[in-house]
Length: 228
Image 1 (cartoon, rainbow, N blue to C red):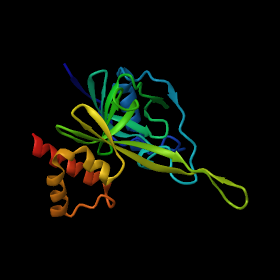
Image 2: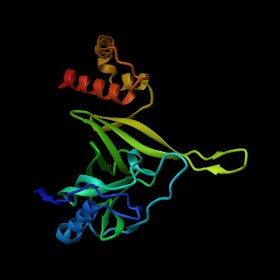
Image 3: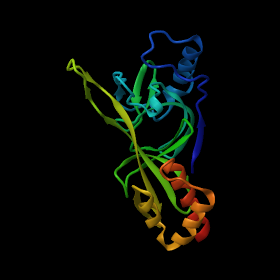
Image 4: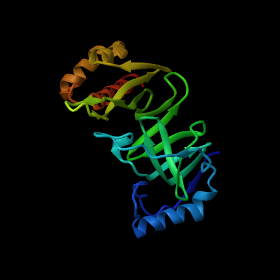
């Protein structure tokens, strides 16, 4: 049986490295810790230290280095309004207790709804980790978000620490995962209905290069309609 527990965090948590919190943020942190957060079963992970800033980009999802209220499923229990920060570089979900950030234990964390994205943790089929579930029907479309370090050396020999966003797309079809590395690879996954899909692409003027994630989702959903 799944249980939904509401943790009433009343405001978005501020940046953890801020010297001064707003009054509203202090109230939110205090409420989470004294009323619900300190009693939640997930408040038991290792301490986390906020990553140092990069010259460009950051370690964090959407470059937000502060917690935002999220819905999580931990040990088969749903918790609402849990403050979460996603360290994409290290593939870790972070929360806070008291004045300390901590890592949510991944072995118990299966789902995180964060910033209008649904992250699921996979342990089989693909490399273990959190994946952004873009579409879920008979088939699924998932994106693995990563941050790649692209150091840049300028004339003065100063090294700039740059973190670039990267995403790898995968389709789960009939229990198997397939990488989507190009339009041809995408069409190859659905080759049994390739003629119909090509017509669908023409009719809807889909441009894979312009938005590969949206087009992959649209084609996968259409394939599911054709084969339901």
